[in-house]
Image (cartoon, rainbow, N blue to C red; front, side, top):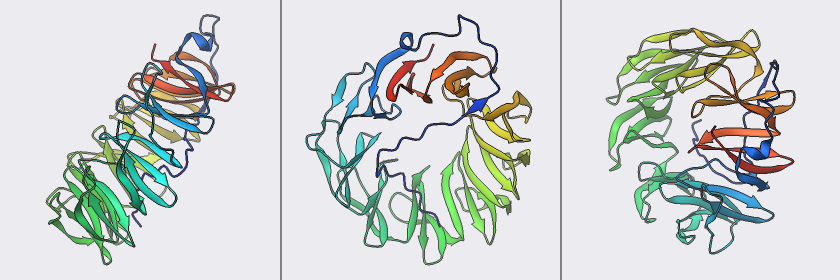
Length: 342
């Protein structure tokens, strides 16, 4: 099934779990955590920054803060759950219904939908009854609920399920690619993973297969590379449709910052787009790179490495997230705050 929803029904914030063989740290590397904080650790939970704001929890209250740590958006009424902003609107939940909040803290679209996605390319997916459709930022229904499932819009097209098959529609609701796939993903870099029978390949925006169905799994493109799985082995294809890195890893993450996290012989390292290791497999677990840094855990504490594998921020946090908009959320003594990129 292809329910691609990104709901924040409860505020449980995932962090990247990573562990490595600890290198020797010098006294200079053992920096005091407070020296790095751009926003002091004081929150009970926190999200990554998006569109200049982050969602934080303090006690039972949820607020949006700016990159200086100031409360920038205060909801005019309290909701049961919130999401970060996307295209100027944030998902909120009241009872069993979902709606949207604007940047003035006002209800932009009243909670009346059974499920929703964040806005992307000017549309949000909404569920009414058992069917899915699309609304505009005004709350107006753009495409009436009529689909069993949908991926949401990406690259101007949305995968939709009618009956037992998937096809694609354009922003007007017209069929762009007729339903004939057994499953389908969003477009990225002009290609989308699509399934025929039990095998996945990649189609272009005319619906023609650029990579013939041959994989047991295929995923969206990231950094011009798409992850594929053959049996239990993972590899990558490029945007020309060629297999760039043959399936050979126990697992692989998306490429970001020119590197992909892969597992080999039960250890994690980072490969380049050539398939060569930039950082040899040495970690028990590891996180992907974001803004040039990746979180790592050493001796039960979290820090960050750069793209050469050198420690950029000494391990000293209880949890650590990705760098977004120049800041990363970290946890220290059960409280969350934000550090700046060195």
